Length: 216
Image (cartoon, rainbow, N blue to C red; front, side, top):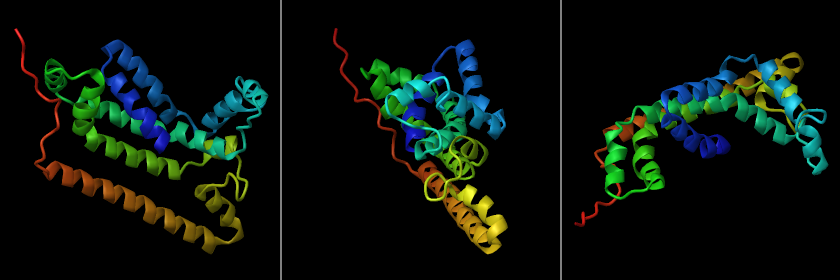
């Protein structure tokens, strides 16, 4: 989630501020993992980062193994869950009244300041909802992870993979893990809804860039 939010937020803002044709192309690329079968995503990651993959040989030459490691788990979950955040974030930034960033720029705010002081606060509700969706999708990720990272207990096995393993071994354990995921996922979604409602009811003004006197 840290990687998705850190890189996905500025990327979504950049996409939202592009021209319509380029934006449509970029949004299509973002949405592609949403329609790919999980197994296809896993095979794609393996073909790219596996030892015999497109980038695997170069990475292995550096002494780094990715496939069937914890790094592979992070990459698989990020690849599958990030579109849920990116697509929602793009829509949130697109919904901002364009006159507000324009007004901030006329008051002397640079692009970074407009992004941090105007765009982010206005899109915060949508970003929170997208983060919740991505988190929920990441928790439930199964196909790409087992294809790219395997299900090595104590190493790459996630809770979803543990449920699958325990289903045949001990149904009570599988049920208990499922209950934990239900509680965690429900808690995250409820927290986001409460936070969004609290923000919508707040009367705190948006911190625009400080005004400056116009010189003649």
